[in-house]
Image (tube, rainbow, N blue to C red; front, side, top):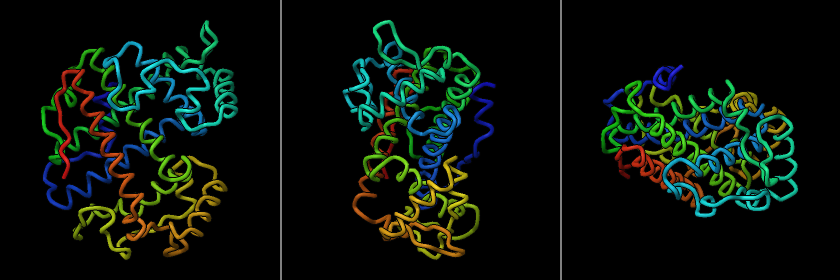
Length: 317
């Protein structure tokens, strides 16, 4: 299946949204794209998100050797040079013992391999496999869908026709697009872990927050400009069970994290004990900073597409 074909299976976004509805949809699309990327990683590694983040990181390091640009515009400068296990663990916020153990498991399962120098790299057997090719195709389609959708909403200036038309990109251009997309995914994973104490807690928070408001563009109701402005009575709770299913995460893990976030007043319980992230929580400084950092990440990934001849510009509102 081609990337263009894969795009047909994602939510179609037509021109016509404007004002607050466009801004709200842009926010929701960005979060949805991130969670879809997490879902694809989880699928590729069998549900272990730490393995997923390491796989993402190893693939980014591999692409950085051969795919433009020489220095990433998306990731911190430390990602522009080779990394051993110590450096990789430090860059991902993982203790050395955890990084070493998880990478050993990934080598044993065929996701990673040892190089002649003893370093760990992504396995070419995996990247060439049906699972590896499927991840690449669908991750690229998800990123392209976000770019095209934001362009239709007026958030991007430039010409995206090459992304919409099947066969318009050369293999080298496709490499640049794929690299920009998975580097944005990795950086958003790192930001999630930084702003929300740890990665898994951050993923539960983001899933609940976007699930509370996903329904708002399916009806005639007035749409606020941003998630923080949505009145709490318009937010739809999501159950722990459905959150766990959406994240492909064990129910007990999701329940434990939800209980912790309820105790910290990050979550509130709505109807039928469902989970809600209230407007007051969205307005907190750290959440506003997290959204700004995510916007900068996406702006950098869009700028990196220039190396594929796609001169686009993300326009803040």
